[in-house]
Image (cartoon, rainbow, N blue to C red):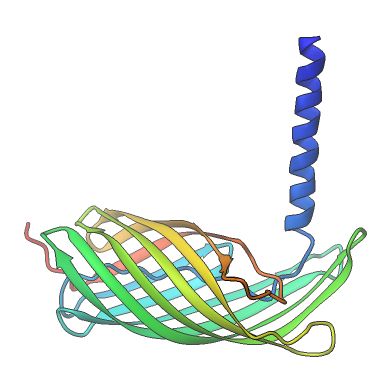
Length: 238
């Protein structure tokens, strides 16, 4: 009897996972959040550049400390995926710029807050036997504000950054309804491990609608990226 109950539970869990997988892969999202740029700058003249790949395909990021407390950033994201056996494809491009304030907390602690604006475009086609076909063709505007707290050392940088974004999606054609601005909360954890000038970077987080406004477009819920971070100009005490 116990064995039969165990098999039923395993079967139930398998069906749940399968159903979840179908839902997660049954759309061609217009909005794919880019990797969050969390530089945790230390001093004037520090420059960082990051290249990464993951859920947003390819990301490139830069950050520069123009004073001991003011930093600027420019970030870009690009994706181009096709399925050789079907007509499915997805393409997106996005670029943004921001400015912010950072502060030291002791020798290693850091606090930062950035805000900025970006524009993007998404195109795609997805066909599914259960859900039919979906067409993506949209331009969007996005504002963001991004506080963060973490640490910076010669070997390890780590931070938590809850990014808030305000998105206006402007679909092309008649397949989608034009929506108002929607707010998303995108909290991420970022870690950079290496030595001074080059570090391996990994980021994991989520992108979820915030508030009661209806979201009239598909979006990607996860943020996962890995890559390399390059640092020039940071001053160390050792």
